[in-house]
Length: 186
Image (cartoon, rainbow, N blue to C red; front, top):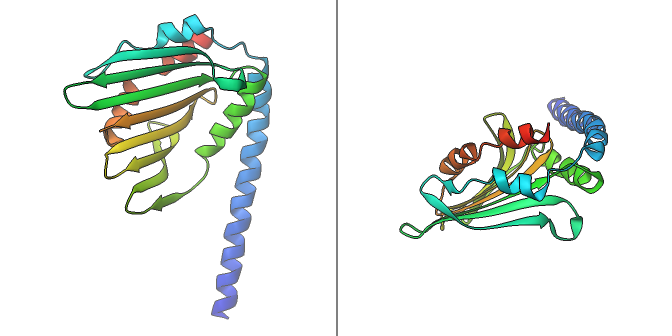
């Protein structure tokens, strides 16, 4: 009897997870349609948003343009502090337009996965910080952190911090003022 109960509970849990995924996909479909029709921010708008400084780090490089072969507008900034070895690379892709909307859907699903894995090298899990769901990976030995998330279902962000732990990474993300991108897009 106990074994049958356990199997029934596992089946219920699996069904519940599948139902949740179907709901997420349905809501994402309408967002994809909305993003397909949206006009992407220009390279100049993205560049003007990119901060010149992030905490004690100065911007040492930037790049705007189409993100590789995907033909979506993006901006990338590199920030460094030579004194302490800290370095941040942030990439923002605008999910507006036909191709961007499909990328936004994929990034959006990242935060909906409930996962966690850990070994001696890294700790990867889905977290929610300040209303943003992200896949967070902390590389333990080097104290590097990578965050991947969708902001407001439109802007796809990848943050990589060298010599920066997860908590500090989120503080730096807050300094980026991502809400200003949303305002530019309105």
